[in-house]
Length: 250
View 1 (spheres, rainbow, N blue to C red):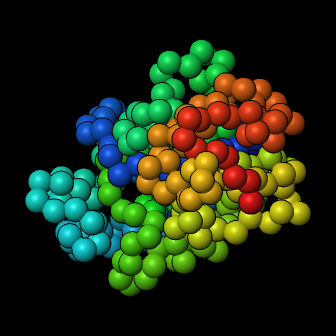
View 2: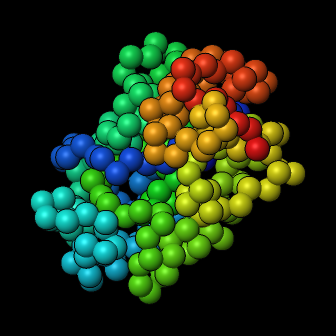
């Protein structure tokens, strides 16, 4: 699917983080390359730089990847063999709490199509990707410092901002990202129809943090089931209910 098709199908976009947990394996006949996916042509140069450096550094060390022992061994193995690796659709690859509670597999066909064409993931390795993009197993956080690039969110900023502003021009964007991912781009509000930066706080007013991940997945699911048109974005955000957390719109 090209950029034009992606834009026409989705006048509303929901921004989500990737998950640290990822399913292993994939389809060997669908091999990953830097130009794979909706944003591949725009971000291939940046992806290639990261992939090449990961290969040079043998997949990264414990400090870079944030894991140890068996998890580190798996992450290093995945990171040194990214180019040509077997792939899974992003929504199948990501297995963390947010994605488990989004639970795309149990949506209706119409809701699932809406989700796959509206959800955009912001990733330390890939920059940006659609929920249905074919992706490899990998590990590289947006908040990592990776020599010689430095802090990845800062390194990605200019190219990712240009790519997203082009893709989102005239659209409604609902941003459910953690701050480290949101720091990787700046959206031009004048180009967008609406831009909602959304957080989940406890009813006491305390920021939700890690404990709010399940609620974030439920909120994303609520949006793709209830927000059937872009004009319903604010209404859909306000109608979300959770026993512990409430939506905060910045």
